[in-house]
Picture 1 (cartoon, rainbow, N blue to C red):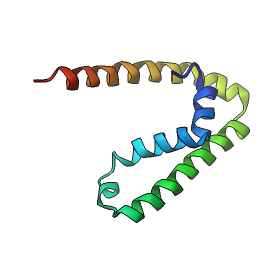
Picture 2 (cartoon, helix red, strand yellow; picture 1 turned 135 degrees about the vertical axis):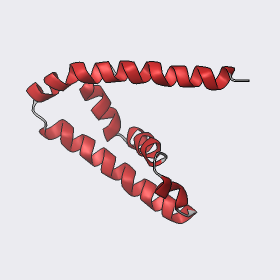
Picture 3 (cartoon, rainbow, N blue to C red; picture 1 turned 30 degrees about the vertical axis):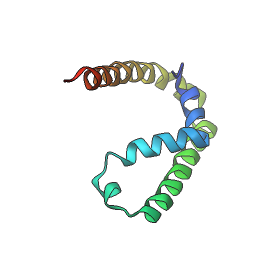
Picture 4 (cartoon, rainbow, N blue to C red; picture 1 turned 180 degrees about the vertical axis):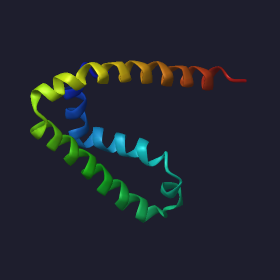
Length: 96
């Protein structure tokens, strides 16, 4: 899905990418599930903006040579997580 680290950071800096990433992260925390509807909407909006801003500033201020050093590790992590989540999906669909 993401060919390199800058493409991923650009996706995060967009509204959709930031919202998807924040939503996925928030679901990992029990405190998120304890929030009421309106509070959840506000926290989600604020968290998504924070993710987008962090990604944008990362793109602007992380030196190119640092990004070049990060990129191979990013590709490795994306590959491993892709296989992991594909396996999870396969098992949830085929589970009886």
